[in-house]
Length: 178
Image 1 (cartoon, rainbow, N blue to C red):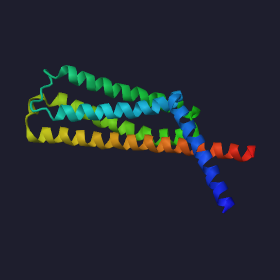
Image 2 (cartoon, rainbow, N blue to C red):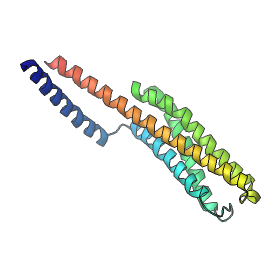
Image 3 (cartoon, helix red, strand yellow):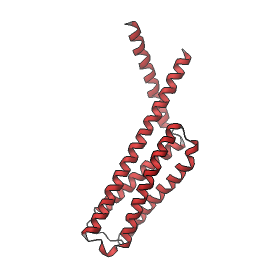
């Protein structure tokens, strides 16, 4: 009974230490962690932009030029993030590297999908009221949303890996100090 209580108290102390460490880590994210979070933000923004744009009743590339330009900027920001993540891969921790390895191909697919849809939009200005055109743009929007959701889940998984590794290190240090 005493051993069980001792283990419970030890577990509570370790958990409290981990929680404190996690809060401190969230306040001081590494540049690479911030970049991974930025990848999620960019993909979410692309998804939000597409959803909002496709739901408009009267699509018109001339009248919507500013909104289309903003979507292109969002896509370009994601391309830049992909490049930096890829270039930073060698400096990543094991869990960050795994996250980057999973993120980059999906980010590239999201960018390709959104860029293809923009090209289609610009190349089919006279057909924007047709059912087939609207369906294509809606399908593209749905795909972008699913990819952005997947990116968010991968980032969340990566954060979980980081927390696990941090907890593991804390426990190892705790065992050494006893």
